[in-house]
Image: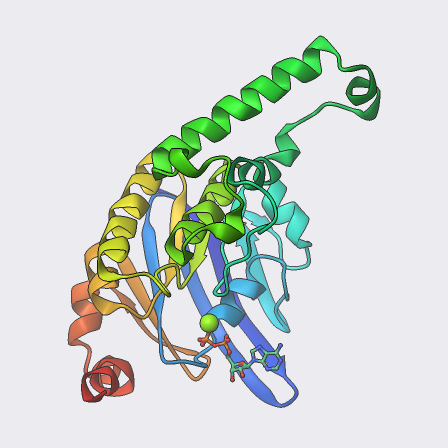
Length: 256
Ligand SMILES: Nc1ncnc2c1ncn2[C@@H]1O[C@H](COP(=O)(O)OP(=O)(O)O)[C@@H](O)[C@H]1O
Ligand SMILES: [Mg+2]
């Protein structure tokens, strides 16, 4: 067990607002780690800060033991960090299988010369890419829509396509920002099982979610953010029973 992601005293300021205020966290390479907190707590900001999208104002980020604080997103992607977005980002006018192939472009080593003359090597790589995408679609249960435009699919299926694109890059860590948003109960429970299967495949998982039942049943550990600060980190049971958490978050939810 080793830390795949180490977040060391990370702060993020937006024009006077301390969106993240001294966050310290270590995510192990074999865990499903949850991040919860009220709207505006800084969860997405933390994802952006630890994936090169919008780096921290101060503090350090270590990925696979190396300092990535100032590295661009591409470096994170190529070296095994993949993510999905709170607002789904798929290529709507591309088919499902093409969306997955985008995720693995770094693995296609064919150069321009090969592309122009269609070498044997390129054909072999294309076949391997197709096989890999087919395996991922099978894994996600979306083989039947392989040729459909992503935009034509239901919200829940588009989310699976986005996760498929992330898996196609062979990640060591996958960040999921509110993956059940817009999903019905049945899709949500299916996604929970799927995330458990993803961890068995290899990558550690860092997931943001509001659905408490989902998080309590899925995560090994959960961190609670509130106003840019870490309220607590612990097992689902610890978190559920923490009075501060109940007041800041769970209590509020019950009132709704
Ligand atoms: N690019 C930005 N510019 C200014 N303020 C931002 C920006 N992104 C997020 N914020 C602010 O930072 C806080 C945390 O936002 P966010 O990380 O999206 O919260 P969460 O994902 O927990 O709902 C909010 O007050 C939000 O308005
Ligand atoms: Mg968010």
